Length: 193
Image (tube, rainbow, N blue to C red; front, side, top):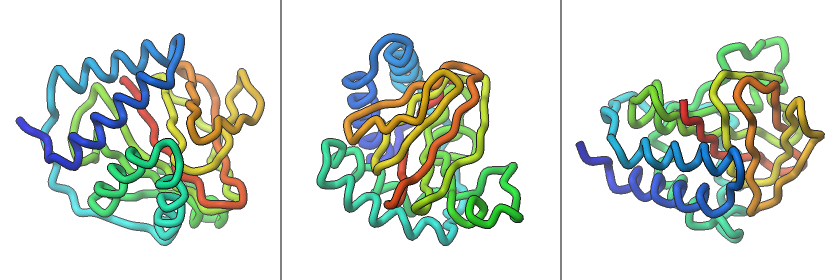
């Protein structure tokens, strides 16, 4: 099975960037992810695209990213954005209106993504300015590539802004969260499941 050209371009640029910026455990995770993506292609899903109001923050975040070191990756993501099903975190509480209205996630590869597969999850998170993502953990390790400014925290590090060329790695099962500053937050996440 062949991937659509826009999805393949995004995955090629993602793999290149991950391999270039990761070290240690993160580099090993990036290599596993790249090997899995090269070994097989999942079924192309035919799910309708969905958007939430916070997705209006994606355009400004991508405009800022286009001028930075990840401009090519941002452009490749922009080509996929309108195909994605953007959703709130399943555990989001409507009573917390800032988080409820201020965040969305989209699966690019993985369950419910453009390519349905269980061994690799790749997605994106957008947040409105000033929003903090809920504390969470999950068994797979995770690598984040920021496309727009933001900060990350986990149980082993204080709040950190990795900068426009940085990377964040969360070991398996660690409690972690992220937050937007004065501008919209946009990050890609990669989990070799």
